Length: 124
Image (tube, rainbow, N blue to C red):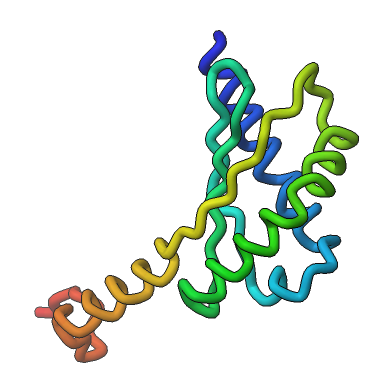
C-alpha cells in the first residue's frame, strides 16, 4: 500500500512541477524543458527531480542551475498545490536520456531494412 502511495505522489509531483516550471522567471529556465521523473524518498525528506531539455544536455544543466536558485520558490508553490504534511527538499538533476533516445532512434533507423512499399502480404 505504501509503494502505491509513493508512486502516486511521485507522479503528482512530476505533474505539478511541470506546471510550476512554466512560472519560473529565471532566464536559464527556458526552452523545451521536461520533468522526466521524480523520485521521493520513503521518509519524504528528499525528492530527486530529473530534468531534460530538447536543446541538449548543456541547456538541461543551465536549467538545473536556474532551478537550484529558484528552489525555495518552487518548493513553496508545490506546497500550495500538494497536500503533503512535509514538503521534501528538491534536488534537481540534469538528465540527457531524451538526447540518447534520439541518437538510438537514429541508429536503429540506419540499421533497419528499407521498406519497399510492400506491407508484407504475399499475393498468389
